[in-house]
Amino acid sequence: MKKFKIYTLFILIVINIPTISFSQNEEVVIENLDSIKIKRINIGFKIGIPNVVGGSAEVTLPILDNRISPYFDYSGFNLEADDVETNFSYSEFGANIYFNRKGNGFFVSLGRGQFNTELTFNDLDFDGATGSASTDFDFGTTNIKLGLKSGGSFYFRFEVGYGIGDIPSSIDFTATSAGITENFSEDIPPIPGLSSGGTIIGSFGFGIAF
Image: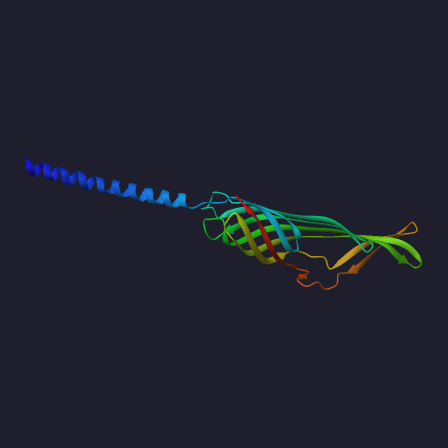
């Protein structure tokens, strides 16, 4: 009888070891997941090329271990100086893919950008007559970037990359003087970082995460 009780106790212990081990492992996993504090919403500013200066918003989704973060950037302003009126806008949307599970650190980015500029030149001299000329300079790019974002409630972000697109090589103007309208084209002068196949992208950003 004593042997039977000992055998029975031994069998019960053996049967329950996996359950005990699994419970312990499960507690460790849950504890590790709870220890990762994710700040999912990031709102801030970006300064750079080609966005110039504007706002930025990013949301870290709870998929793929918090590695996917859709974003949207926008810049827009009107400027008038030396008889030149500028209406500028730049928008970009896409997703950042982080290497870790905290929504910060190194990331790669894939997005789509749209650059729009309207220029108006006033008080131009056309053979003794005063007139104006206007033009649009627009292009879209597919943007591939590598970046680094700090953690914490106040963050910094650096991005570099390249925007692939068909960049115009000339600008079409519409000129008006003394009631007469003419159209003409001018080649775009060399601009550092800009070519017919795309543009260099670089920006510095900062903001609040919560």
